[in-house]
Length: 313
Image 1: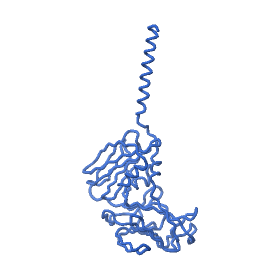
Image 2 (image 1 turned 120 degrees about the vertical axis):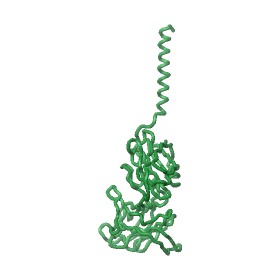
Image 3 (image 1 turned 90 degrees about the vertical axis):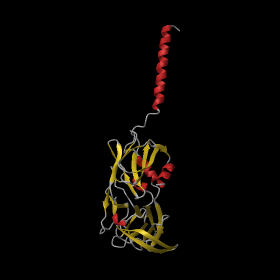
Image 4 (image 1 turned 120 degrees about the horizontal axis):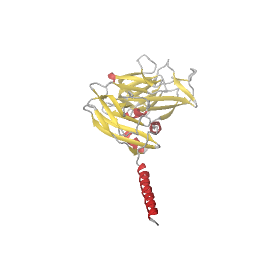
């Protein structure tokens, strides 16, 4: 091999070597802004329960968290107003323990969402393929929800989800009203004593949320994530477990932020993301004593691992 060919071969080797290095380094390039967090949120909605009930008699259901659901006799009707006959399937969910539930319950694509719920209930009735409704001229379906962390119902308001927005339900409306009381309910497995919230529902098919008022000063929280995380593929929320509040953070100027968190509160920050079929989570616990600016780097997790974190909040 003459000298000219040796030089050509050396240059080819150098070009091939650096091309290989560049190719390997591309494996570590961060994901682009791809993915849809809705895929992950749908997988996490695993708390819907069903029961077969007889609408001609009073039906009482008690959950594992000692919430009580009572469907009075003859309060259900078909869409045309006729009274329901035959068995009916009741689908319901009650969120009172996990503040994180509300972070993926509604409105994940818009900005900052005021989801500071003491509880969230959702119920639907069906018979075959037909929907069944509560007769608004009769007594409603009753939820009894025990107190959590001694929250005071006097500072709570009741909201329901209509037209892609949370709307405040005043006491005179048919969607429901919120009161605070103790109860003694006799049913087939004994007597249930309780102290907490009573909600009377006369509308089905939409979530109903009790929102408390944050007393005292508030702070601003901002969470900064890598550049490939955006509202398209990520949701970030702060949970204040002592106050039983949850707030979804809005995306602004490259960060997820909220300006209405209680000063001095214990904060649990959680981020959820779906990117190209993989799921990512970051979590942290902080005590707020002023405005917070936090940098977090989500790590890949399985659905089971994410649920374990959410269940622990």
